Amino acid sequence: MKPVITAFERSPDGGRGLARDMRVRWALEEVGQPYDVRFVSFKALRELAHLAIQPFGQIPTYEEGELALFESGAIVLHIAERHGGLLPNDPNARARAIAWMFAALNTVEPPIFDRSLAMIVEREEPWYEQRLRALENSIRQRLDSLSRHLGEAEWLDGAFGAGDLLMVTVLLRLKGSPILEDYPNLSAYLARGEARPAYRRAFEAQAAVFAASNG
Ligand SMILES: N[C@@H](CCC(=O)N[C@@H](CSCc1ccc([N+](=O)[O-])cc1)C(=O)NCC(=O)O)C(=O)O
Image (cartoon, rainbow, N blue to C red; front, side):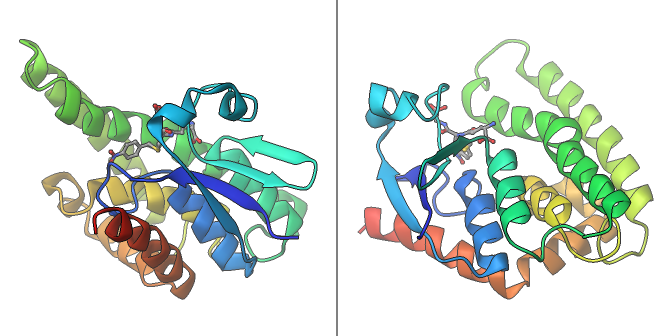
């Protein structure tokens, strides 16, 4: 049975893969699991039918038989647990890989996401420049630590896994920014993620949705 995920019928990110269905698409492509997409409008996000599976009125969701899941990180973890290839079998290595999933979403993503949101909705505020500087300092603090951990390694902890998948989608939001260019090993790490065939298939799929909605 093919799982069904939800995504924006018209993504505000212009097909750049920043909406969080991208990480679910990528995980499904990495494990070779075909899936269907139910596209939702911003209006539909607020309707009871969607709130019943996503209490915060957002995408993505993941439905498979009786299971309905929300939270992109939890969905990636579920996919990794149901299929091989995204988490190590060794219990300690698996636990460390899950720690990196949390680090991506809980430690690194927040200032990066908040900066991208601030640059859209807070530009006119009197305190915008100060807030932007504070957010960029927080981002640099996180990237200093991440860059130091990664060093010249290919992935965060051994083979590519769910923690790398999430971390790459987090860093994607900084692609092309002067901040990321200050960390050559993180720019190369992002490029390695983007070069994966499964990433390319997921990226092209979400980009095609935007192109079709823009047609
Ligand atoms: N913690 C949740 C967060 C999900 C989430 O942020 N969903 C967003 C889309 S991805 C975040 C996002 C939003 C916009 C852009 N963009 O580039 O315009 C990119 C990414 C959403 O549904 N927003 C609609 C709403 O809240 O009303 C998860 O990880 O699943």
